Length: 166
Image (cartoon, one colour):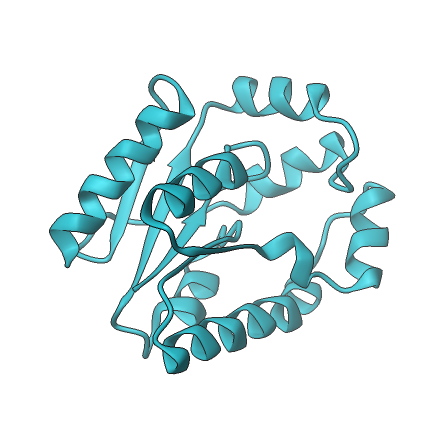
């Protein structure tokens, strides 16, 4: 099984994804590492990515998913997956893939990004992400979690949901 932990920048994807992967002893990957140097430079400069910028990145993530599936590896990967079309690319044709979308209030996201250091995502880009976000409808393969409590509690909810999915 593959789990995609999605949500806007600052939603806790990496923290929660790492916790889930550690609890399940699954492979972990952060989709930020799949960005091209050009994408990273744009975001560092505060320039929002376009769909044209994102498609090669998403295609690389999809290829990584396919490699894990072919190898029979369980894994967790983080990816903003803000739009339904992005989630469709990542989920379609991969029935053992699940997605958790972390929903966090705009003010909390801004506070987290302002306090985050050493990351290439410029906090001023948050507005462009919030303008693009399409919160998914929950279904058998998609869970939307509104943040409540500590990241460990969120990870516990996700692990329980995945256990039910198996």
